Amino acid sequence: MSNVSDAGNLMPIGRFARSCRLSIKALRHYDAEGLLAPAHIDSSSGYRYYARSQARDAILIGMLRSLGVGIPTIRAILRAGNSGVALLETEIARLEREMAQRGEAIRSLRRVVEARDPFPYDVQVRTEPSVLVAQRPIATSQDRLIPDTTDAIYGLLGAIREAGRPILMPVLCMNEYDDSCDRITVYCCAAVEPPAPHLADAQVVDLQGGDVASLMHRGPYEELAIAYHALYAWVQEHGHDEAGLVREVYLNDPADVAASELLTELVLPIR
Image 1 (cartoon, rainbow, N blue to C red):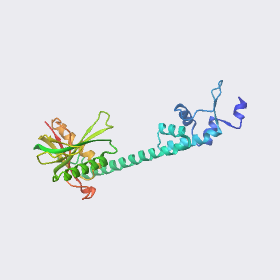
Image 2 (image 1 turned 120 degrees about the vertical axis):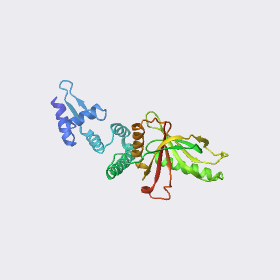
Image 3 (image 1 turned 180 degrees about the horizontal axis):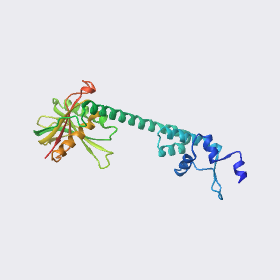
Image 4 (image 1 turned 90 degrees about the vertical axis):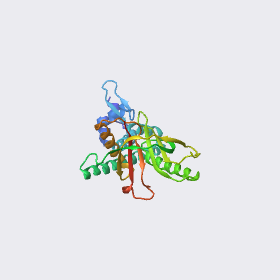
């Protein structure tokens, strides 16, 4: 065995770990995950040896792990060789999404702290009339929900104007999640007067009236999560059942007011 350990190209796992500023545990984990296998394992002792040429990959793996890059992405980067750096764009986008989500969480928590109430909303019950709406469904994801919905709403309003019809209230969206909550179908709606206009990629439907529970949210759309939770909590606490999708009714335009001044009414049909 001395020939292997003394060979200039191979190092025992302990020395290799120290030279790469990694732990032996980390190297064993990288091997188990299929990222970096030892160059040689002694059949009698089970000792692991690494080649000096593996130091670059070992250090790269350690660096990427310290930056929060996932094992599957690191595996793909190693397999791609020099072109693997391009895969980091995906990780950058993921981290940016996570940072945005953490920012939203911080702002929402501040709202709760300032209100001294975990659900700082006043819920009201009323009876809504039925309303004729132009409805355009789109498929999106949680990451793309706000920009895709915004584009779809503006597109629908533009189509209504092109049909020679006025823009009427309410303008709203209803979000329907799949079982995994990975995909979202958004029904973008705007009120129209009869007779029903002919619109591309949209249909005119009757939005059913009835009893609803509602609350008003002032602030960015990104902070609507607490409002949703507050509405659902109130409905359950007061013994109601949901009778349809929540309607996000937009009372002003993000093109005209600051995000902090946006008014969105959440309206949940109940029975």
